Image (cartoon, rainbow, N blue to C red; front, side, top):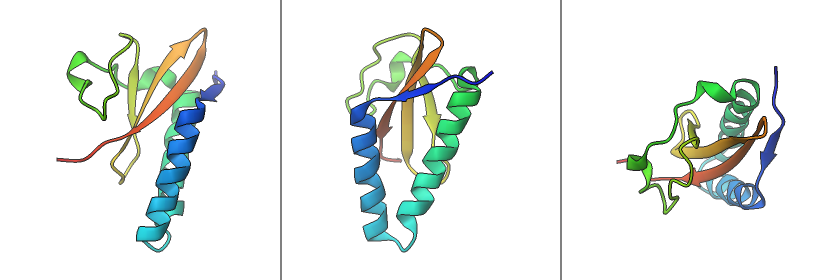
Length: 102
């Protein structure tokens, strides 16, 4: 069963900015990044329970505080991009967050 994914406006804005940044830095980078994020969003929609629950130790991710014990983390493949989402009345809501790899 598939859930409807609801993207917050701040997520879409950050996504657009990040696509633009990768486009400027690497030939085809913006499109590769967008495809990687869309792949993860598709998985969140289809299998929202398959990602790990975010722990209190993840609170240092670009100021994104842990607001719920049901927040989940989803990472884009090959890119340092982390999406935080939670289930709300059978609907996944996603809030993207970039982070720096160490």
